[in-house]
Image (tube, rainbow, N blue to C red; front, side):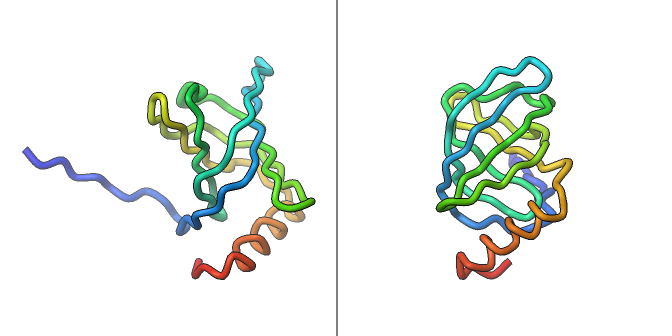
Length: 109
């Protein structure tokens, strides 16, 4: 039986390995990890111990000397590999910073 995977992403992902800190809300459990890819609407975090799907998180991603911050939700898990996070609340200044990073990557998005 073939399995059909439906693409639900609303923005193309760009492969960018960046330092990330993810805090599970409201518990406060914190993990340091890295992104595997990122888009205007979310990112994938490489981690051996992902936060449970549906959890709300605060994420801080560092690129050079700048930090992007947002509130998001874990929407996808790859047990022992990582998790997909959708950004839920991003301030305009933070969104502009992320858009600039993506544009500077040279990838089409």
